[in-house]
Length: 497
Image (cartoon, rainbow, N blue to C red; front, side, top):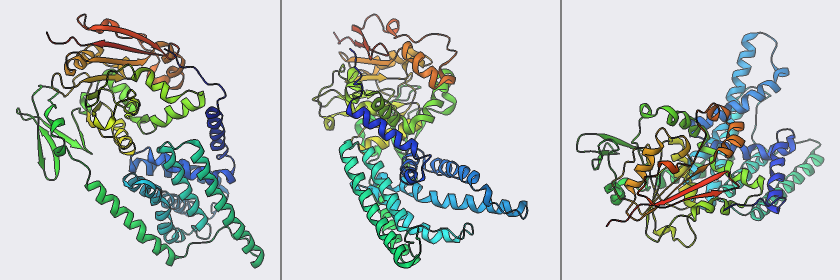
């Protein structure tokens, strides 16, 4: 089964044009005014809050420092150091609204998710930036607030996968309004003889913006308190087992925190709604090496896939369903993906299956991947129980799931044979299992060139684990996908006699 490229399709041409616009934004101030905030909203959204704030400050401060070298005071090292300090403070202040947006926006329903950034910027920056004594005092204008809102809307539409036509329509609307505002400013400059760069937001009006901004933050907090807990998942708790002793686990609550307790006294904490069955010291060998990669790319893994497929002209649904349609999923089934990553495969379960009736579960050894999976599922209005654990020691009871599959990661496990046996153990008798991953052809042509330090100098080539499937499994089939760049291995667990 192969997927053909649609060379020079409309979607592919659109993707290349948009990519070119964002590249030009790094060189053109006129374009960068628009693309810069969009990239900032997107980038901070892919990172953990503190990490995103620090990286955004660094990525903006260093270029500004180089560009402003000519403005440095020449009265001594102390004055220059103070100037750099004020520049750093100004950059940090500009990054605060993006971090607030990251914290508040994911909890907001529908279009309200676009409001935290412009409201936080309009409330805080006009009050704080004038306190920075460089460049004659900085200001934040109405047109900048509008651009921030535009950026938040575009990223919101991107995250919710609006059709390109709707995104272009929304962008056209915002640009039209912006040009109308620019025309008003131009007419004002002719009448006054001045050349305004924008209409400043007065301190009194900034205080007005502060009220709805604070209201959104409180709303987000209230909604976060209503999130389901593991006490609401008795069926999921019942099938959990200690990965070490295979003992059943009991949910306990201490000091407003949930954790899982085994009869022998093992304790497994639950953080951000995700049970932790894997400690950092438990990661060794290839699992440790590639987990470092997953922790780096977890936040933007979905977007990398989406952009790459668009630029190559591939049909994204067909790309994923080439292997997902091999699964046998029925309404009401319990489904486990043992390397769930960011949860992307859950979106492409076979046609005709009612997602709302499925009992979905996902496991991964990367906390970064799972946190982004959690955010994605919330965005897609899907629900799944997620656990941080090693696929070589699944924390589930025998015969717990109707469907068990794994896509990606299989090629570089410490113990691939044990991981396959664990999949078979937790699958119900008669279940069809799926293991899919890239081939050696793809690893050499793509991963070794883009992520060399993780994939070069391997001792063995990548091969489908046909020889690791126990001989008593039935209906063993190896499927060649994507022009030999991907394989899918399916086999059936024997039904009980």
